[in-house]
Amino acid sequence: MMILQIVVLALIQGITEFLPISSSGHLLLVPALTGWPDQGVLTDVMVHMGSFLAVVVYFWRDCVNLTLGALDMLRGRITPWGKLAMLIVLGTIPAVVFGVILDKIGFMDAVRQMPQIVAWNAIIFGILLYLCDRFGLAIRRMSDMTLAPALIIGVAQAIAIIPGTSRSGITMTAARALGFERPEAARFAFLLGIPAIAGAGVFKLGDAAASGEAITFGMLLTAVLTFFVALGTITVLMKLVRHVSFLPFAIYRVLLGLVLLALIYSGMPLGAVN
Image 1: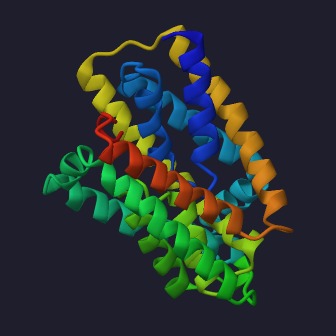
Image 2 (image 1 turned 60 degrees about the vertical axis):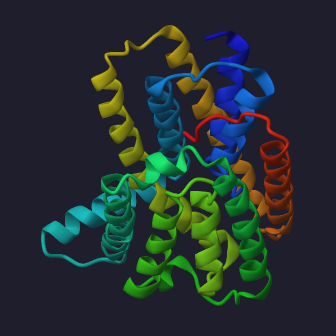
């Protein structure tokens, strides 16, 4: 890959994976605007690993506490961190089940050939993000998380498997609709995303192994750049959500969707959704 393509991919993955603005929508624009060929499955694995490490590094204290809490649970000792670890695991199950079902029925292969779904999802879930943030209460913290809201947010994360939805966007939307404060909604969305991002990376790694691709220096560089971009994105977002609503992200999503629709209906080839 050219250095410019490496930088662009790292920027897109590192920023859009965590901002509630739909990574798949931006990835559709790249080949349309640049004419670059697909970067390959193994590059997708590397950028996912870069994203995964960024979340773990930023939330390292939470990750340590969750791990210790899970170990306590295995020893039969229930702690608040152990309960939260269990809720994150349970909240991840809907995405796993939904993903397997969609893959078995061939739904995802069909959707990848329909970029208009990405566009409409960017618009629809952008509007929902605004409405839930604007009218949702701010009365719950992560310490108030119980099984019901964890599963609801987990189901929302499962829906994000459909391109254009945005995993971080829809999980934050669900958390705000359930009354969680904006920073707490973002924090839980990121922690819930750790197993999901890791799982996506492992899944893609299987595809890469089957294709016989070899890891190149360019792929490693993309992963490293993605890590730093993602770490910066998370840092900025966690500061922003303490003072700014989700309205700017909602507006951006709607505009992105409209741009994609304009390109689609003008006949410009956007390619398949990754």
